[in-house]
Length: 276
Image 1 (tube, rainbow, N blue to C red):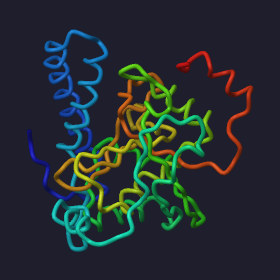
Image 2 (image 1 turned 90 degrees about the horizontal axis):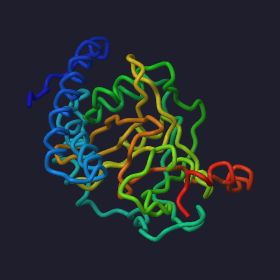
Image 3 (image 1 turned 60 degrees about the vertical axis):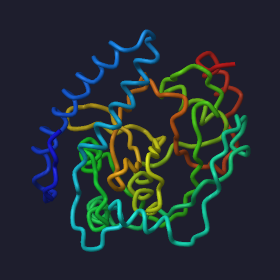
């Protein structure tokens, strides 16, 4: 696979990202074909395709700028993990019925940048890589930052903890169940803010940001994924369609709501789509 190691100024990214996404799409198509040939179950094929897509995006990310003060490079990540620190609460694997059943995993701060451009420049200054789809939505008008500095409590859980028992579940059902138990979708800003506030992320961890999707230039709905693929810390995009299949072992980030859980009317409206 081609190595994309040059640093691109923001105003020259568009053409590069178009070519990058074409390469990812072609590679994903070929990998899905190989995966399908080796699997007898449709659900297994979907899970396999999902992880192949994650690996491809991790391999094809754009190094989004300077290494002068980089903290996202693999060497810097290792050093960060060796430093003494107070660790976030470990993620529980127990099924939950309410947001009260899951501990706050990490608290981050949003609203610390004047606009999305300065936020993207901060990613660059830290040496954090940004995938093509993620870079597209960070540059879209729909991506906004908070005008007020606010601490946000994040929870970290899997669809399996929300009660889903099949191999995969649609993104829409994950969102519906999360909101049913009293969690909120994250603002789009949470993804890049978590990326620059989580420098000791373990290798192999991919955290899907539970957020409203933002459309790329071509109209594809995308959500963000904060990841450490082994070559450094990255921010990538993934399928944000309501019907997108998500493995139940995936890890999601939602925001703890300080409002009451969904009303009985809301719960009833989504009950038909949720597991018992």
